[in-house]
Amino acid sequence: MAFIHLDIRCLYTLLICTAFGSVPSNAEIKVNPPENFEIVDPGYLGYLSLQWQPPLFLDNFKGCTIEYELKYRNIDSEHWKTVITKNLHYKDGFDLNKGVEAKIHTLLPAQCTNGSEVRSSWSETAYWTSPEGNLETKIQDMDCVYYNWQNLLCSWKSGMGVHFDTNYQLFYWYEGLGRTTQCADYIKINGKNMGCKFPYLESSDYKDFYICVNGSSESHPIRPNYFIFQLQNIVKPLPPEYLSLTVKNSEEINLKWSIPKGPIPAKCFIYEIEFTEDDSTWVTTTVENEIQVTRTSNESQKLCFLVRSKVNMYCSDDGIWSEWSDEQCWKGDIWKEILIFFLIPFAFVSLFVLVITCLLLYKQRALLKTIFHTKKEVFSHQETFC
Ligand SMILES: *[C@@H]1O[C@H](CO)[C@@H](O)[C@H](O)[C@H]1NC(C)=O
Ligand SMILES: *[C@@H]1O[C@H](CO)[C@@H](O)[C@H](O)[C@H]1NC(C)=O
Ligand SMILES: *[C@@H]1O[C@H](CO)[C@@H](O)[C@H](O)[C@H]1NC(C)=O
Image 1: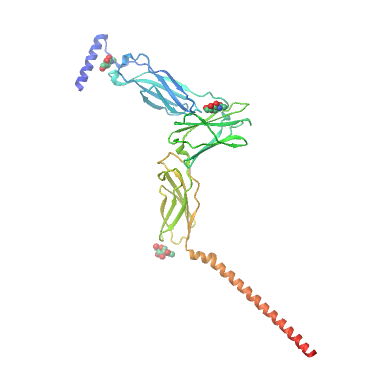
Image 2: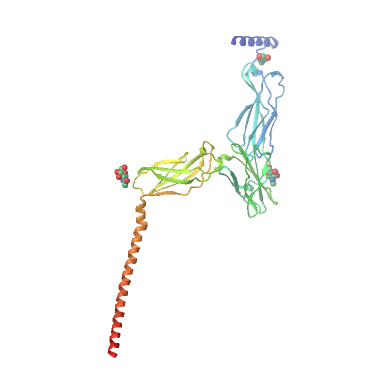
């Protein structure tokens, strides 16, 4: 095979040499860059389409599959993303707070040039949304939490120095949602939109979620603020419930809790446990919903723990810890406890009551005696009188 291939190549070289009277070299093979390279914004708040047309004068390379090497990035970002494609378009998400720049060249694979790969020069383009309004008028401190992988809630603060008549609007989009949609349920503070409660978002995780919060004011324009994130990375689960602490023998303790209710699969949780033995506390994590711990001293009287949950690294890149659960405790010797906190005080009180009663009784007896004595005297007087 190699021989035949070599033969054909020699034959062609010979043919070309005779035709042009010179030795061909790959340096002479040239290809043009793609035509009409542009970045198109379909209004999806950051999901842009990079598109182009084939280069001119491709006739020399008939039967060759032409490829394109595309590089793009947000202006200011350190790295270019690189894509090699045979298509005439490519789509990806960008941060529209910044500009976008891209460049592309044509690639002629080695089999088209009888030598090494040939590239065209770069064709470049850039895109940015018209920056209306002052940078300070943007909303600040955007905070979005996807509660229990179910309810998305975002809140923000006003831009700095904006006029009191300013109000904000939130728009969102993700692949699968027909069109860019405005928030339908705003959280209002003093009549201003300061947050949004999203409706149920069907198949919206593991893909880019785009948000734009812009605004309007009679007195000056408001700079829009753009956000991109993936919903599975901002999940805040419910805290675990039904904690149980079982002391199996003098050393082993079993801690157990229930998996938080809701749509999050059991395998997606990581738990953090805070365990307290008398006065010392330590923290550990596990992906199971129970754990065995060793008691450091079989004399310890108070064992307590609490748990919180988060989505683990197998299901997301990031997450938010839930609130802590209620604390569950085990108290050493229950009889000792009852003795100290109930029986002893009870005994004291009883004794006290007894002593008081005796004293009272004694006093009463003394009193009775005196009365009786006086009566007797009176009686004896009467007798004498009769
Ligand atoms: C390369 O080879 C192809 C056929 O394999 C031939 O058509 C073409 O003219 C050659 N080009 C050069 C520059 O040698
Ligand atoms: C805010 O953004 C949405 C979506 O891009 C757009 O339709 C709307 O006109 C913008 N509003 C203002 C006041 O710029
Ligand atoms: C504590 O453990 C040690 C050794 O395991 C044992 O000898 C001792 O009796 C235990 N004390 C109590 C109060 O259980």
